[in-house]
Image 1: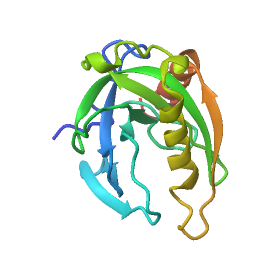
Image 2: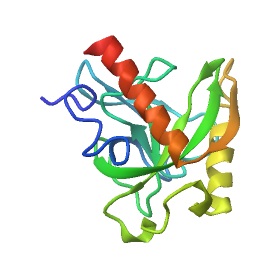
Image 3: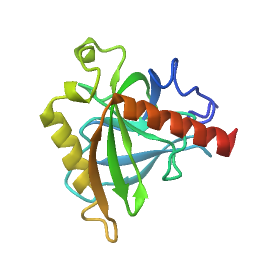
Image 4: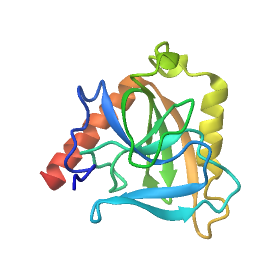
Length: 177
């Protein structure tokens, strides 16, 4: 069985175009995680707060970030896909975040194969309402989990996202290649 984290490329033209492996679905509260040892998608937990993912959320293959996990990616989609779906995506922004004292940034990307997002090239192209909803979700989604503390730290542009992806690719190479 293919291991979606280790066996897939980071993308067809990383960091400009990446693969996003979907774990969590837009509009749902289930927190799925890819377990590379199975390999498969497992239910990690149901979010304790009454919030739902603002878009499909997952990870970028062959990356490893400062929080010692594959690098997180939120892909803006109109309709949810499914856990394990691979989306070819373009990074357009980076959300800075601290999760329990660890840097836990998120790449924001758009699907390459959805013309509704062709006009979104960089942070400034994303509607402010969308950015506010994403920020609100990540700022509050762990509020009812005992001992969890999350802080969103603002937005950076496409180049920052691409630089962070390259950093995560380098960390993967250093730790797993």
